[in-house]
Amino acid sequence: MLGAAEKSRDAFRTISEVAVELEVPQHVLRFWESKFPQLKPLKRGGGRRYYRPDDLDLVRGIRSLLYSEGLTIKGVQKILREQGQRYVMELGRGATTLIPPRAVRAELNPRAAAPAAPPTNVHHFPREPEPNLRMSEDERAHFSTLLDELLDLKSRLTAARRPPRLSP
Image (cartoon, rainbow, N blue to C red; front, side, top):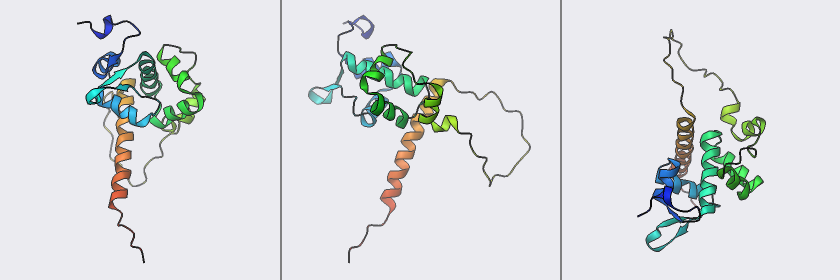
């Protein structure tokens, strides 16, 4: 049986093959499908997903924008909305000249552009030297995705806790 690396460029790929190739867990690919309606792999019997070459290019472009460029889900959604699916697919094919300039990236990723305001209710203790806590771009993107998921869950929980309105 041929592996993903041995398949032709035009061959369809399963979600597991895509996950291995892009070094992204399968659940993240399914999550991206819910966040990016442009990402629609074929679904066959039993809900099995098959990624066409264009789907794979789109996923590569989304991964690049999230993990390499540090954009948020909303930032990538904005690029897809304003620049179109073909633009992101070209990024997935390796076109680096299409990546938006830093000013645009700062607009799409406000967390990276705006310095955080210091908290006002924090007790200050003498600081010990901090170990090197720098994260790689992949780790930062992974945590950014997790944060987006957690914020979405928080808003759902808040909405679920609201008492139902009683009609007169």
